[in-house]
Image (cartoon, rainbow, N blue to C red; front, side):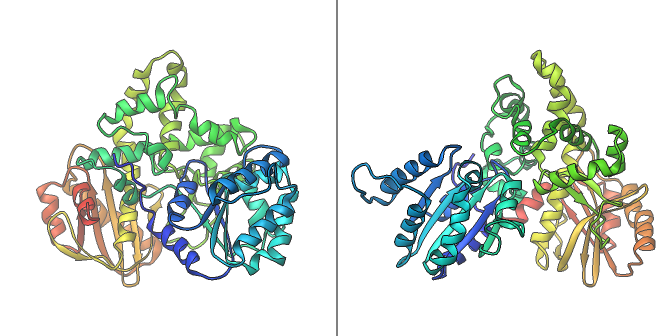
Length: 480
């Protein structure tokens, strides 16, 4: 596995634009713990004058003393013997002095902790920004992991820093095509399986030993008694949430589903009313732990008709295979976890493979590709991609373009796509889709498969507008 920083190209491009300005910038950078916020900023700030300050859970005096020492060390400056910033005014005054004539990046990591240990620091930052700091060339990054607190301080209309930020950057787990740059694995199936289990959060997937099997990594990193990720999702939730047991029950219910669940499904299984569950689901959405998914053709984003899915692959894996088998793990029975995983592995990975295909279409929107049959194909310019369903009709891929629609079937299993499955997509499923959406655009059919397609199915697809994707072709197209 590569140890170098894995490019977040869009984020780095945004940050470089900020550096190129000659004005003061106050940027809120936020996202869940472990998602790579600090690493991204430290990579961006290489070869630039930078001051990085981590906010511990500590008193005002301890923080000011630590900040004084770090400024001396990082900027190679001297203060009078024994000097410590006496208060926050003195600290902000110093930031003004070092940024008034030249650019400097200042990173306050976990800044939201100041609201607990020294709330006046936030209020004084508002004052200093309004009066002096905004006249400098400072690039001030306020980095936070407690999403609720970051919103309260800097994003909501009542927050002390609301209206002061010049930009914001929400960091999410990496998609598959950034994730795969971290590995030099030739077996694309194994790479997709690693992504399905450990997801796109750098802290998780950088622990993976690519020379070992996925199951060995599951045992060593998640299931063993002192495994570093054994209780990670629970600890992540505990830092943000109260009534933890309800959240855990909700997430287990969602993780066990094969295609997402409705509020009604969750309410029924937990013996609660829908209205009781709304606040919990909204909070999990804000934390990027669950996502509300509507039919891609629907225009309203609401609870009615929406399905909920776990947004993070590792958290989904943990609730489906670790949390549900905790009694066995407590007695050292790893076999129960592995047996459960082996039984449901293909179904589990298939849902992730669908997401990968969605990402692939977005990245190749309007581009020419070569599909698995060696055909040169132009992907239409897509303005929306997702899933579509109606009662018992499920369409794994529905991509919307101006003059066309892509409808797709995605299978991750050890046998090829059959002719009957292709016929089901291009006849019954298409008929329901057209009837319910009134869509009359040209339809391009997409088949994504782990193990190829039967010859009869291939001949059928060659006669209609179609795209055939395999894991190997998908990665080859993306430059691997």
